[in-house]
Image 1 (cartoon, rainbow, N blue to C red):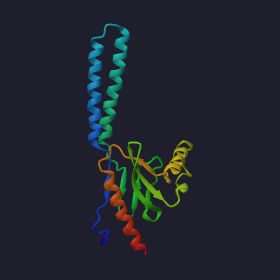
Image 2 (image 1 turned 135 degrees about the horizontal axis):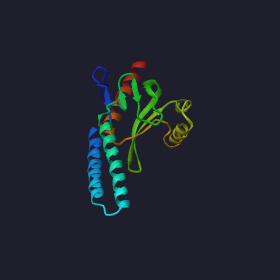
Image 3 (image 1 turned 180 degrees about the vertical axis):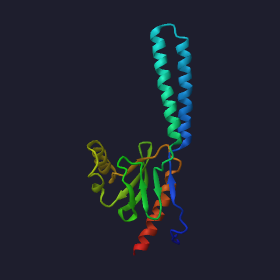
Image 4 (image 1 turned 120 degrees about the horizontal axis):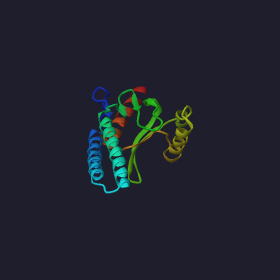
Length: 177
């Protein structure tokens, strides 16, 4: 098996899926319209109040889903320097390959997750607020790292990210030797 140089490896950028956001927006908009219709045809004031509140709720949900669909900030970036994490609860930013043991995809229950195993996991949770620190410590106990990203609603397959990250990590290790 021949090793690839970083010249032939393309950086990988993972963003949230626009399709999922727009499907959510369409469903919420349809429910808002149905609630408006129900409000117009309601027989009692209580039914009308309930329908109007549902129309407002689903209207806001549709608006937020549309805005979420236009948000294109990368969640994960994988390149020759390391991984940029903006998706885990810890959100450490740039992780250099020297800090990363391994990147793997797991399935917990039915939820796929991306796990970035690091050499010193405790150092990432020192400056976190107490509620995030507790979640990060639980992730360390369950997965050995606080850098756990639930994989849903992204525009790349988890297998592609794991493969590219491991290629970059392997090339980085070979360069250090």
